[in-house]
Each structure stands twice: as structure tokens, then as C-alpha cells.
Image (cartoon, rainbow, N blue to C red):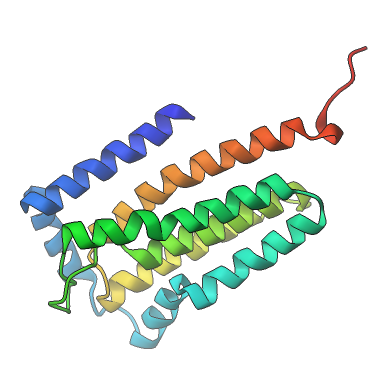
Length: 198
């Protein structure tokens, strides 16, 4: 688990450095953005980007937390809640520090994408909470689809640069790997999951 977390954080640091120094990755980012902005119907891209709004994503996580709490997964619920609370604590200072303008907006504060971060942690946390109780492994693919759809909507509508979204996924991917590891540890400590020595 440590290597994937470190890999995500190192790639995130590389992208952040490129954004700060206006390096070659930033130039590629601007070109890629020019190819995707405005593609597809505006109502669809706006709707997809709204999946990252706190008014949409947080209720999904809260419902999953309530369900898991009812099933007795208190530590897992706490881990998911802490992960969601960490998002603004990480993202807001980075937005202020990098002060990157948006593709269609000269005001700053676009790196990393807050909507992408919220979507990944809310839907990912909900999936982790529901997985032990799902008959099939559907929560994770659904969370991935919702997270990717949010990022696609943000790019197509011109709300964010591609690197803004990618950086959010890397940063919050590391956070979700740590959260998943904490949940696995807490589940292995529950009395029901222990096997008696024979």
C-alpha cells in the first residue's frame, strides 16, 4: 500500500511543480484543454460537473455512512468522515498557493480541482463503506464512473484544466488508499472477523 501512495504523491508533486514553474507539462495541458473544451452538449457537461458539488456528493456519502453505522461499522464510518474532512484542508491551501487561473476565468484558485476531489472522496468513501454488504462488487465501479464523469464534465465545460483534475485524482487517490487500508485494519479487528484457533 505504501508504494502506490508514494507514487500518487510523487506524481502530484511533479504536476504541482510544473504548474508553478510553467513547465512543459503546463504547455501540453493548455493544448489538451483546447481540444476538449466545448465538446458535447453544454447541458450534459454542466450536469456531469455538478456531480462534484458538495450538495450532490456529500448526501451520497452521508447515506452510506448511516447504512454502515446501522450495520455496526463505526470505525469505518469515522475513517470515511475523516477522509472527507481532510479534503478542504488539503485542497484550499493548495489552491491559494498555486493561484492558477481557470481556462475560461482569469480569477485564480483552480489547482487542484475541488469538485474532482470531493467526488473521488465522497463516492469512493461511500463505495468502501458499502462494499462489505454488497452482494456483488458494484459500489467501486459506480464510484469510479461518477468520479470520472465529474472530471469529464469539468473539462468539457471549461471549468478546469486537465492537470487540475489529474492532480486532484492523484492527491485524493493517495488519501483513499490510506482510508481503505485503515478500514481493512479496523474490519480485521472486529470480533466477528476473527477466527478462533483450532
